[in-house]
Amino acid sequence: MTGDDMVALSKKHTLSEWAAQGAVDPIPVARAEGVYFWTPEGKRFIDFNSQLMCVNIGHGNARVIEAIQRQAEAVCYVTPSGMTTEARARLGAKLATITPGDIDVFFFTNGGAEANENAIKIARAYTGRQKILARYRSYHGGTAAAIAATGEPRRWTQPPMPGFVHVLDPYHGIQRGWDTADEALRHVEEVIQLEGPQTIAAFILESVTGTNGVLVPPDGYMQGVRALCDKYGILMIADEVMSGFGRTGKWFAIEHWGVVPDLITMAKGLTSAYVQLGAVGMRQAIADTFKDKPFPGGLTYSSHPVACAAALATLAVMEQDGLVDRAQRMGLLMRDLHENLAARHPSVGAVRSIGLFGVIELVRNKKTMEPMAPFNGTSPEMGALAKFFRQEGLFTFVRWNYFFTNPPLTISEAELQEGFAIIDRALAIADRSVE
Ligand SMILES: Cc1ncc(COP(=O)(O)O)c(C=O)c1O
Image (tube, rainbow, N blue to C red; front, side):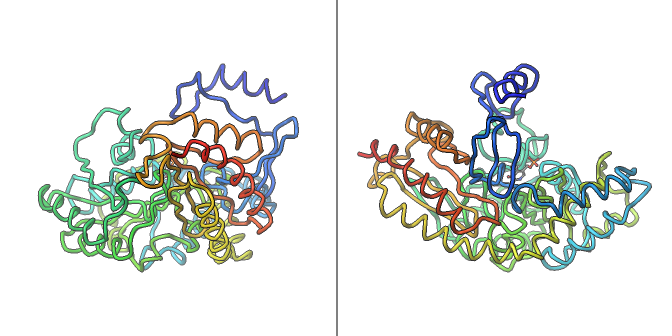
């Protein structure tokens, strides 16, 4: 099929997510390898977002593809409630060794939203409380409870759901900037007291906020959230769907602050998106709740053998190739590249990164810090920047006044430089609008 045919037929018969369909203009993809992918006509793109921040080990890894093939030949599917497989058994045991503290038991899902749905159910069953605390600058998935927990504008499109309470983040946007950890924690504690601590089952939060701007919390914030949760008997749910599996230079981002959450949710990097899989991990004491009482959830594709085999192979690749340490090392280089852009381009208002998880925020004026596009909006400049990236063969997400630098963890120094050279040229477009 030609690229044009792929796009036309896809647009005629399929819907794209979170978008007015008239504005959707997908890139047709025929092949991918390492940090690159190609259209059917052979145009090459450097993947600077690991697709949807998920192809952490890069494209086309033969060890994972072979593991998927081997599992498919042995057995593709068994019912998750009455049967089990070696892949499921080994994956649960393996995750217990890499997740923080005594998180030792896992329920497997098809993706991140379902992981969060189940984390919320588990928290409610364990505590006997109903309310869920979450933050405004967050995304937790597109299904019922996950989108109700989400704070950002995609929640506005859904009917409001009782039982979800949002708190402010330590970050208030490029113009107001950051609270200290103490200020942010005082706000959280006040909301807990005003809501009634005995009514709150859990506080769900991304360890490093992803889509809403790679927000790395100030030191002390995560430890403070842990302490508040302990003080009031609230479970802490770390959403590591985007920040997990090496992205930040640790297996899980929460490790940067030495905190053990009660529940941890994951997807994306778990299989590097070769096959869809998510999971919610829980501390042993929480899992023990379901020894005598039924577990309140189920999915036809829970613990799917092909997905579990893909995850095991992905984790083996990450260990064999030292990708977690590599993300930390290459992250230092990426930080230098960010700082270099910030020093030379008047449109760069802020750069943030941790490991290979990065974002660049653009402004019209470095004194007033007026963003290059408004909250939840776009502007001609941000549109022109996105168009330039596409023309020049760099794929990344451009959102509001910022864009991401989240390449596969396998990226080489030369490939990182190649992507940043395109970004450097693109920023000249934004610079022209700076007052
Ligand atoms: C932090 C976070 N949680 C949950 C989700 C939802 O995951 P999924 O799209 O696999 O349902 C996402 C997706 O981007 C995410 O970034």
